[in-house]
Amino acid sequence: MIERQLSRVLAGLCFPGRKMAFVSGPRQCGKTTLAKMLLARRQGRGRYWNWDSVELRRLWAKEPRAVVPEAGAEVPLVILDEIHKARAWKR
Image (tube, rainbow, N blue to C red; front, side, top):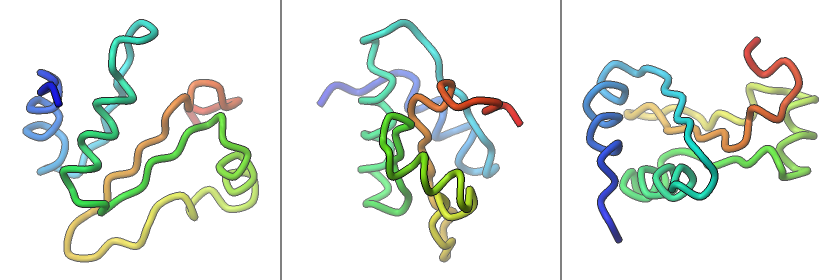
């Protein structure tokens, strides 16, 4: 698998400080691939969600906090792919 340049930046700036990162770019540039690669490196300690999934939209409407897995010794990585499609996602 090709190493994505942004993966080092995210790992260095966001993960240690438990910060949120928003990754944007044109279609087909590798955003989803990057997200899944970062999650794989954490050996599944986290969750990938895609807004196009009916399961996520139902869960989000019912209990948004349920999309975040329980935190153990390490804060889980939560990926919300295509979240910009959600109404009022910035709130």
